[in-house]
Amino acid sequence: MKLLKKLLIGIVVVLVLVIIGGYTFLRTSFPRVSDAPDITVEITYERLERGEYLAHHVSLCMDCHGTRDWNLMTGPPVPGSEGLGGERFGPETGFPGNFYSRNITPAGVGNWT
Image (cartoon, rainbow, N blue to C red; front, side, top):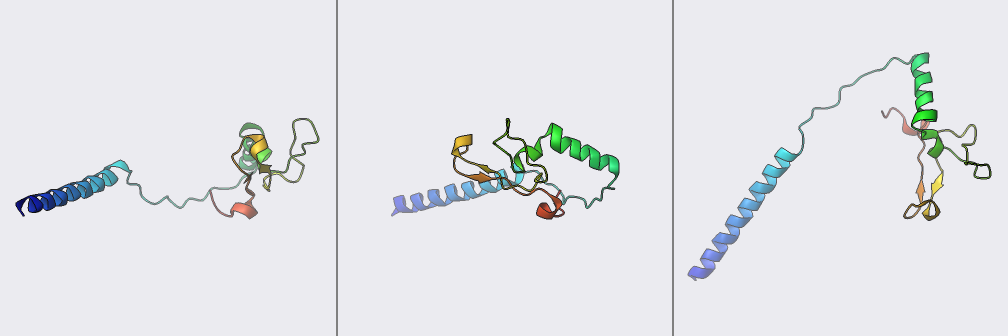
């Protein structure tokens, strides 16, 4: 009987320590951040041109998020399909399964930033 009582007390103590340790880990591991501020950015011609430059020539977003013509060398994006998504990436391109690029135009992502 004494052995059973000691065993139960030991199990309860271990459970309490695990709960306290888990709570402490969660409270100290993740940053405490406030809600993101609601900002508005003035849309100017220069900003639009910079965004177009970044999306087309630096980050190459439009290469994957547009339909590509693989009949031409390097598979350039089809004019007018930039950002519409729908391009399939499958096992033949190194993906484990089928992946379809998303629509990243304002109509597809809305006000997401």
